[in-house]
Length: 241
Image 1 (cartoon, one colour):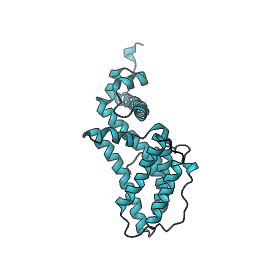
Image 2: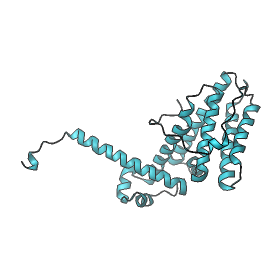
Image 3: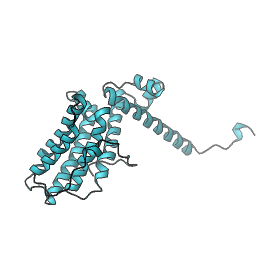
Image 4: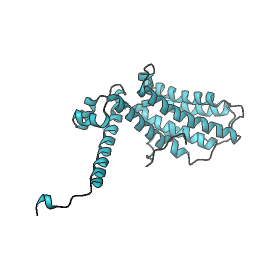
């Protein structure tokens, strides 16, 4: 029997396997790009540098993205998906109100404590693209605003539960909490100030007290926040949920 006599496999099955392989290759490229971006920033990413890291041809990398801009946006989306899996979704198992808000901040702190060494795409990207309008900046801002919306909703639910003062301004409270994370990166990553994680946790407790928190649940110890990453969820949904 010659090769031409062999039965052909359905075209749809062949295309499905090719698509799956292509998706796996693209995912591997994005993973490598994310690792590079945490070290050299989004602006430092290039098709050439990524081809070298992944040991692929430039044309092979380019075929999956089409442009450096699309590569940068893919990295931002992947970073956001991991952020949600580690910070947002685990907190959803907590009761609405302050328990959930505390869990969201504790998870945020856990991730931040790791990124003191590896770098944060949201923060480094903001420095790179704050005055550069375009799709990359839009993707960054959209991701951060999605997370902020989730935090504001948690604060609002804590008000509904009567665990925060009824006149709390969600925007102001979020501004102060976000400020703790930004200060932690600056103090711990840039200035190498000892005890920065503990200070950020103390700052969060001070914010809760000033805004009338009524629960007595202690914050997660700083020592626990400084170890390990949470496992990734198999699904990535939007923090708007």
